Amino acid sequence: MNTIKAFLEKKNVKISLKRYGIDALGAMAQGLFASLLMGTILETLGSQANIKLLVDIGTFAKMMSGAAMAVAIGQALECPPLVLFSLITVGYASNSLGGAGGPLAVLIIAILAGEFGKLVSKETKIDILVTPAVTLLIGVGLSIWWAPVIGKGASTLGEAIRWATVLKPFTMGVIVSVIVGIALTLPISSAAICAALSLTGLAGGAALAGCCAQMVGFAVMSFKENGVGGLVAQGIGTSMLQMPNIVKKPIVWLPPIIASAITGPIATCFFKLKMEGAPISSGMGTCGFVGQIGVYTGWVTKKMPITTFDWIGLFMISFILPAVLTFVIAKIMRHFNLIEDGDLKLDL
Image (cartoon, rainbow, N blue to C red; front, side, top):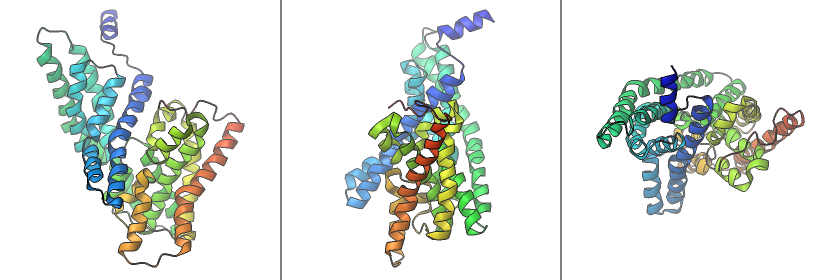
């Protein structure tokens, strides 16, 4: 046993919640931001401004999201170069085969492939062959075997959402908003779930409300720790950046979840906010303002009369209510020391 422990230490393989659930997860979120989310923002800007170059750059960036996440994980695990470079293919495979659970598949499989790659690294005279071969065989092999199952598991959230869509607007608003919002912050794809369910109409509006509550909520409630950089990264990027902090202290997730439970039914019952655009927009929240653009393009495409009340509803649900509600709830929790300074600090 001591020999195994010594070998693992020599290879810098540290099996711990901090390394896998905080360090690797935090790095993965940054990889996701630098690829899928940045690509989405650029693609959206390009499509709205009719700049093909931005659209093309955004498209390529989105295509490489799996690779970017895996390399980020490998960097957090301090993988040697041959392992790190091999993780590019592993990430692409696991994300592609993982469907709605792509990011989660990348996280699990890249960790395993990276650690096994480290174990064999520089142990033979033909390291240039052995290390990438082991990393790829394990990583891509597990991607083929596990990623579709992980994706199917992530899609089970979709069944809960599908069930909720047939309920009365108030109940549906609460359930859909909370579930899709949580999915957006978890390492799974809320956008893919919404697309698979063709989530539009009032249900799409509730989904949008939940996503905005998470993104804007975390951005505002963590402003004290993260400043303008954190506000932008979370507000128009992704609330998944907070997952390492959620793993360390789950209660910090409560304010955005409560906010989503409030804004969801307000969207469905009071503002009658509907997603008339592409279903994928329902699960994007304020990322690159794709959700808001989706609502607007739906109005235009269907030639619907756009009233002042419609605009007020969109801005209240997307920005104002999530910011105010989450700030107030977090303020109360900070008063009772349920959330403390530093709990929401990001490594930006």
